Image (cartoon, rainbow, N blue to C red; front, side, top):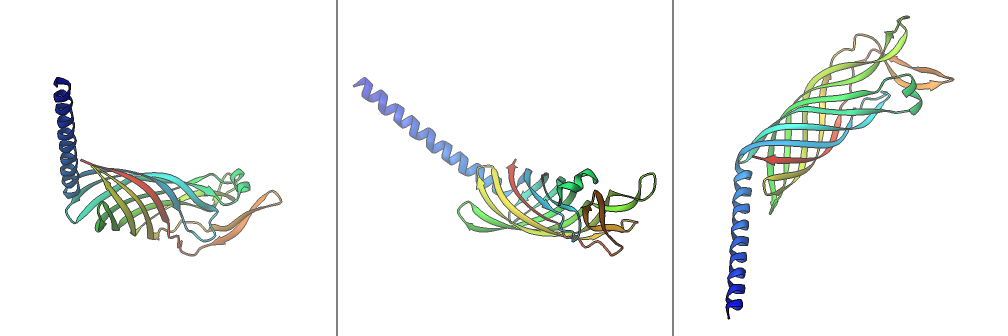
Length: 222
């Protein structure tokens, strides 16, 4: 009889604890979904999308701080950098690798898909840097080398988001429309290696690169 009572008591306690845990978790999730500070880490792919550039897509990370409120959130992605690859392996012996660096302030607006799933529209302003190849470098002032150019503009995108307790998991894509500075020298396009020499076309046109990023993110809600 005592064993039966003890077993019944333990089962009752277990059920009570489970219900309390579920209740607390739901309340915490609702609270986190309403407002609070956020910290995000994103990993993914950055594409400079610069016609004729020797630099291609690269992997990188982004870190963001934000604040979430009912109906929208704001974020500042202050550390975002992608290590760009060189389009042809042979070019690596002539040209240094480069990075696509971004800093952006964004507004995110959620649209519910039901349950814990939703999509977010993203829009904001961005400051960017990326490498181009220019001549006039080296002792003879005739060598090609990488020089960073900066730009400012706007970005927009969308994210598919899942809310799990006080965490948000997201997959998002963004496009950046940027007004780039003049590199100060003719820059090289369509660069390739011929007979052991680096060749390409010189351009003085305005840079028209429109970068794209795709990333997976994990956001902590405080």
